[in-house]
Length: 252
Image (tube, rainbow, N blue to C red; front, side, top):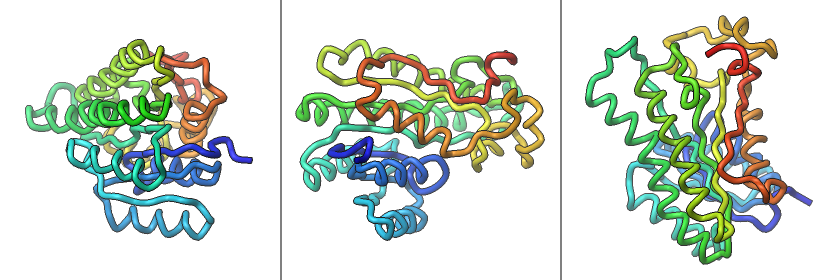
């Protein structure tokens, strides 16, 4: 028996990295998954791989800054599977900036994808979850959204901080309707994102900063998302799940 048997999920940013791992894990735990990205070729490959493993998934094009794309994703989940139980707002971007050398265009792009994209996902998922009688929203933020990490772009930190507080606001507003909302705050995870987020082409050089002694892996985040998506966390909402190998405990 899977931990998500009978559940229907939407996952954004599912074509590679954490999102692809989350999509596969959720499917292997029994969820039916609609997952999206703007990287269509990569997304189709993930869809084919999971289908070969026996998972019930469908890839769709999903630009998280597009209201039409979000509406289509929710409509597809309900039309194909009859409901929506889980939303994982995983999609995000980072850019290389030093101190305050952030252009207005870069700031707007970061906010559009990382913050507005989360808002739109929640905006369109909530009515479907109300129709389903409840649900779980998992928003992927960052420890930079809690601590304002100096290695991260200020625009990235601000966008992830917005996700953190928006998650709590959503939790308070919809808890009485059986809809939970929690955020995940990864530390250094071994994906392409870390290279753009920290101006580093060799993220392994940062292992010395991590008390647990290694970079995080996408699976570390995926299992956190699985817990928050499942009924195992039915008494958890408005919370921050920090998955960072201990970094935030010793380094501001």
